[in-house]
Length: 71
Image (cartoon, rainbow, N blue to C red; front, side):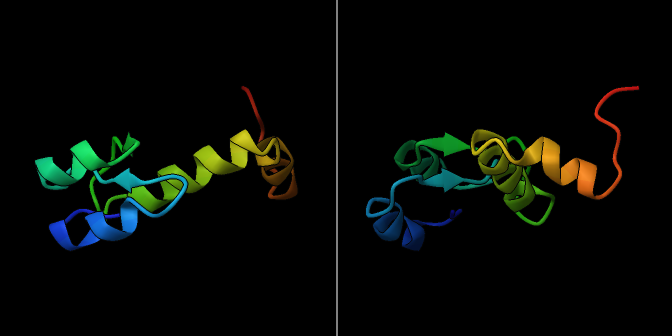
């Protein structure tokens, strides 16, 4: 996950490269995904939730914290 030019080198070597919404345009073009949130405003949390949902553990995690799935 990155937002500046120095991050691109690493982003090209990982399986899921992510740029924040406020990343430089060059970084966004190098990323497989761009977050809706800006860096420092929930971008990492956005990606973590995406991964947990993809792994199928999100609903169980919400139950653990007694969060209702729908109201």
